[in-house]
Length: 291
Image (tube, helix red, strand yellow):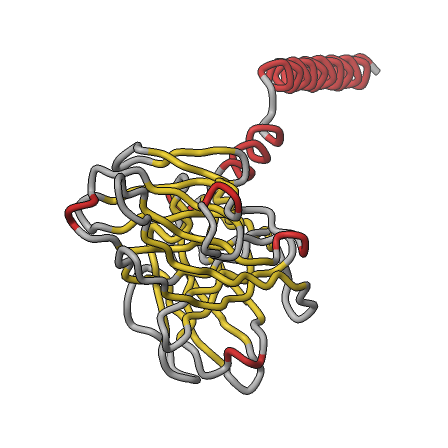
């Protein structure tokens, strides 16, 4: 299971902004930070530690750092994507545990000057309200129904279902903003029952292309996203079972041969019996005439 929070912050050299967020044990977080255009070529990184007046090497340990642009760079549980067109970079931390709670710095490396930092206070907890993972199956052409619980504290937030593509946990998103009203956008129809804290989604006329990993989640009014439940959907061929069943029930060629032999034998028996009866009747008539 991966629980994900997304937020966007402007990074200004020498100025530190801060945000607090909650992740869930077994889940993950996505941190999204903006940077100034003139730092597009600079290295981006995430480190763990509280900012102090001493040199950074003494208080912040790098977890991931890269100059790679416009593609994902992975390092263990950490991934970083520097989107040079949007001037943002995303950092993903997966498989969270309570030991991951603490203060992080989302940063841009600036030579001959202070790096720009965004302080991130992460609190990792366990949540019992919701399922961590769901697996669903459907035949091609049919429908898939998704049901996800969410914490009561998120009742008023926007709900969504995202489809994962590679390292992007939300490559395709469908959202619903009102309670007890079906959404009218995207391939997934969503319904949010805020009284029951239940998000329902329906995908109709599914194909093999719908086989993928999806996430149910919520979005706060500050724009943070929390991915709560992982949903794995597997679509099978609609006629695979029918074809195999029909094939096994069809008579084999040997069965046809046996039936044909039986019919021929039966016909032969009938013909022989008729001949015996006719001969017996003729003999009886001859005897009567002679007497």
